[in-house]
Amino acid sequence: MVAYHERTKHHYRRFAASLGFMDWATQLDPFRRYDGAPLVALPMPKEGRDLSYWQLYATPCAKPAPLTLDAVSLFFRYSLSLTAWKRAGESTWALRANPSSGNLHPTEGYALLPALGALSDGPGVYHYAPKAHGLERRADIDASVWAALMTLWPASSFLVGLSSIHGRESWKYGERAFRYCQHDIGHAIGTMRFAAAALGWGLRLLDCVDESAVARLLGLDRAEDSECAEREQPELLALVGPATTHGRRWPGENIRPDIATRWYGKANVLSQEPGVDWPVIDEVAHATSNSRIAVDEDLSGYPTEEDLFGSPVRVSAQAAERVILGRRSAVSMDASSAISAATLFRMLGRLVPTADGQSVPWDAIAWRPRIHLGLFVHRVEGLPPGLYTLARDPAKVDTLRQVMRPNFLWQRPVACPRGLPLYLLEEGDVRALAARVSCGQAIAGDGAFSLGMIADYMGSLVSRGAAFYRNLFWEAGLVGQVLYLEAEEAGIRATGIGCYFDDPVHEVFGITSRDWQSLYHFTVGGPVEDLRLMTLPPYSLEEAR
Image 1 (spheres, rainbow, N blue to C red):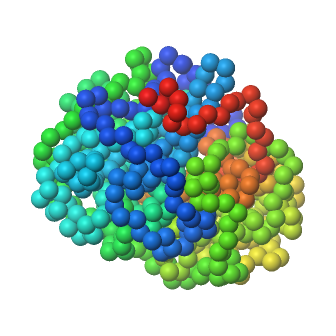
Image 2 (cartoon, one colour):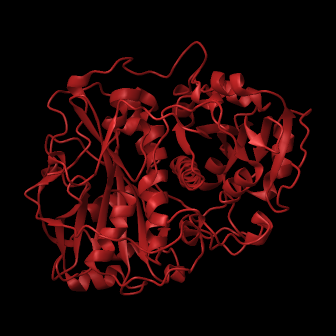
């Protein structure tokens, strides 16, 4: 995976390999369906959970909802559903709760659920169909097998799984697409964790589940069900429900090859025309397939909520549902909107886990933060513009000082909460610099701030194994999802930037070692709305049928 990462870097004079143009004839359909699998339409929630946005982060805040079909419907509505259709002329395309690079949506969602009345009288494996907001029943599970599978967890728990269809991203992005698929998995972890929080549930990734186990549970290893259809890459399994503090340990010995008594449906073909193959994507997927996620790393030394924010945040301008379903990716920024230093501090405070290990969404993952931020601050009232850094693991401040440029200031901003590890490195106008290292995209300099997510890279791969390469991108996507929601709550917008010049970003911060790598960029600011586009509701169009 190290060779893959180096190979897929963008440079000023050379981009990572891709087709270089849009071959519309080979673009993959963004909606997978299983022909012949029974579809249960989920009841469309007329009203969501009556929660303020801040309550998503307070655990436990919402009273746990019972596990019903309505609750499952709301979970998927908040996590993987359509949120709008956009129309320009004769073209329409869907937006979703889970963001995606290029709006290409390589991520597919699954659930393993017990008997739920209107859904089924027995446990089963389901594929979520976002266009229909329904669950396709992929398999029946014997009740005794289900009981053995879930023996360690409360009866009201269930499992969710995610997979990736690499071709949806490689159609546009070529060899770099594997990175973007992993970003999207990270975003989906975030949308699922916030959806669970809105229902008073927890969500945790399960330990040491390699791709063969995920494939077996979700039916992705069944060649007879895919035939000519594009294959899905198994990614992860997560436990959802109340009392998820019972642990992350996966009872792998209970995953029997005959877990399902019957399978239903065959995957649809997403493109009738063959596209370009990128063999290196299959190679890196194979190299990172054997998960060795660390279990409950020690969070002692992390700040408390009061340390991060000055006082606990107990007020919001918007309802949780409005923020979740209203989230949009900005296409361009207005180059004028500013935010206050207090707003920036709150946004960044949401990105740091708290000492109790219960902060949403960081309680979903089992490892200490490996992603730190190199910030380009442009328009933040009360802060001088310039380069900053946020050490999301306070124990890494000294390490970052050693690997970054020796003449940096490392000054704490005025009025910064005492527990927020934010430092001014260098004052100055960095708007042009931010745009230049983000593939020349003006949006990186036109917002209030932008950032690069710098990973503790080689040390993580050495200590946690090759599969942790995916986890680093998942964490980056999770950081991005929090920024999306925080921007929405603040009345502005954000967007992820996957195109950036890797090594020039490192040079900006004086990083010369390959031990640290930038994995994702983001920008936050005042959006410019494209008035040529019409916004339509997500589930009342003919396209949704």
